[in-house]
Image (cartoon, rainbow, N blue to C red; front, side, top):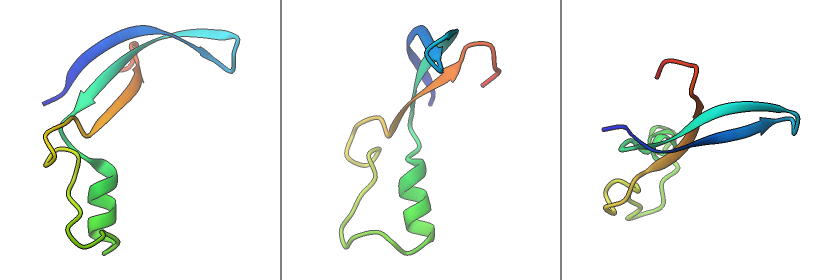
Amino acid sequence: MEAIVATGVWLYDGIAPTTVRVVRLDFDFWYAVAEAGGDLEPGEVSGVERGGPAVLRAASAGVAR
């Protein structure tokens, strides 16, 4: 499940302030890409399987999630 864990302002190109949300995801995108490409190391598990959030990402607060 997604959860907003923080909000703030990011300076796009150092000059344009943009309101953002930091979102915790329970899906490990890069793990899924590596799995699909056969690039996982033997025994490698995703961040979700290790018990933590897989990804923290910043998203513009003005864009629907």
